[in-house]
Image 1 (cartoon, one colour):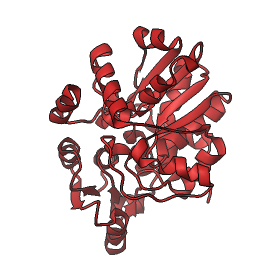
Image 2 (cartoon, one colour):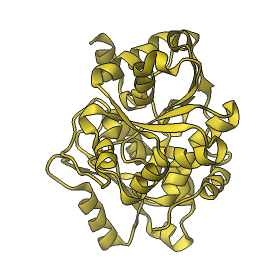
Image 3 (cartoon, helix red, strand yellow):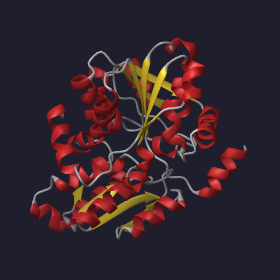
Length: 319
């Protein structure tokens, strides 16, 4: 298996130039004062489709040869990768089928349909989305665009951290939401090139800590379908490609509880006036838990997305 490199991130950045948004890096004087640190939030909630996933989805589709573009693509996702592939396919004129769980947030499903993709629903507790997707590949000749187990997807995601380092310079630590590991893997490639002394941590929901277990056991650990409000990080296992990159370059994996995600969701809404989905709060919650241990450090946080329906958002704020 050929692992992607920072050169692939640079190539992805060239493909994405003028297509993806260069998202803002924000800070909070209050948050900084509580920790005694400088914390930089890379706000991918302002990315196209409201999440970092657009970067990897577009890069993967843009890299396809003409014959594969003509046959179309299929992807599976709970929402953000679905929207990313759907919008990228629309922009590039490629047919797209998206396999989505029937519990996916209504806003994410509606957006995916709005970009012109065909949506096929499944039950995530009883059906295997990868089997369904492979059946579409077998029957139609479409190309599978996985949400994280793909070198071009990883390279595209790595452009978020590249932009962060380009804007703020070197960091002591970087905290990245972790589901399947695509964003973390890409961030590790950029950190190795642009801030090699930076310690990069993945952050998982406590109830879905398959990556943490995998690193501890030195092998990929598969877990039962996890339950958490962080719907974008409910994967059951890393892919071989992301496991290798995280194992090779990562500083470790930490976990946070749902209650801590809600606390950060409130912080972003009240203090910073931005909407962040629970998955996007993972990194900030981990940093907050570190407290004064981060005193004097320069710390980066990738906010992965802001796609949450208003009913759920208001319920979490009120809980």
